[in-house]
Length: 176
Image (cartoon, rainbow, N blue to C red; front, side, top):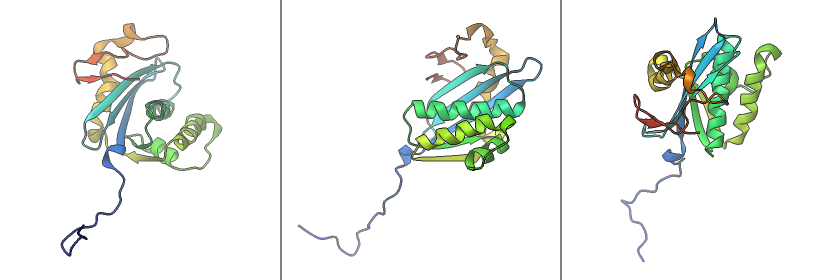
């Protein structure tokens, strides 16, 4: 057996790229109807879409509540899929900042943030990162598709839309 010579490289350990998944979320909010539509997209380190989900939400009091709820749904979906290392990205800067911190929030706005902070403990690694809307196009498209497709008639009891169907416009599978 030969020992490595001068020219051989020793590779240092690093987190496997396929374990680092990026989850993008976005939301639309209708103030008059107090409704929101969440869009969630999961990608691997190569940018390949592994799954997506769209959820209609009722009785949403504010834009902040809609964004925070969408972030909760994003973290819940990731945990349900058994993911251990994730990077959660969205254009909701305040929600991202509050999710990343461990400080307590005001009771009125803090319920969803506290949920996120508790849920993130279920991961080995969970980062929250702000991303500009232009870099969040697929999640934004999912969140806004309700307007164009009139998805109200497809809503299931739990608020999920068309679970398991193919999305023709984006050609990815809706998963749970």
